[in-house]
Image 1 (tube, helix red, strand yellow):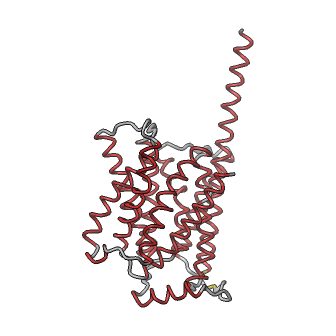
Image 2 (tube, one colour; image 1 turned 90 degrees about the horizontal axis):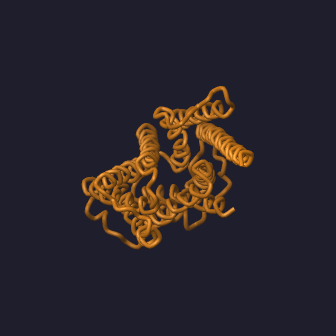
Image 3 (cartoon, helix red, strand yellow; image 1 turned 90 degrees about the vertical axis):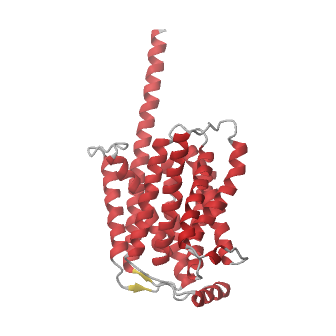
Length: 348
């Protein structure tokens, strides 16, 4: 029960991140400096906890491990989060949240190419994997390439006065840019690099006992790399931290989404496995799809609804096949152990 509650809570946090980031961007927040502060706050949140929790099991890091952590920081923090925030800036919160559901599909495709995943088309599980992947990809293409008629579904609902005031203030700071060519490209690139991060971490640190320390190291590397990038693309005055909505965005995204999110995901994967954790991805999409039109008065398009629905259906088809396959393998393993015990008992 607790893993379910934890996953739902963290996915709601992620939905809030998509929305707060969009507001902060319209108010003029520098995206590159945001990524740097987010990684730095995640490092500060993780470091004390991981130091005491894993000090007895943390192995020493050599040159090879340090290089791998550098690459993980580059893929998981520097490239992914900068592409994500640029994709969010040029599109919408709903679009970014929906595209993130393609991560399990991308991991699955790369795993097949690298022969880390097997697909038996003679079995229903293998067919489910292929069908789910194709439906997800079709939904992503519709979401990206087709808009269709506008649907003002929540026109009778009004956002709170505090939100309206905040958004009206943001409009005076900078205009909202839309680019439905660059935006989807950045969003899909973020999915690709994050999927590569998952694959690389699984292979490079398969037997690394201190997973939370690894996450802290990755955030630290990402902080340094993102800081260097931000020095080239961010103005000096943009580094100044004030008691405003931007500071709230930094703390919220860094501590609750990056820091707490990594801890919750690590715990749930250890308890229930990666399939269980990935199954809750669409929760963020649903929350954002409901709240964004209400808060931001953004009209929903038919293409967005159809594409998002196909991505979610395809994702669950893929996850169902994966969970069914894992259950069969577990049952076969238990049966083999039981048969071995029976054989030993007969011999004795």
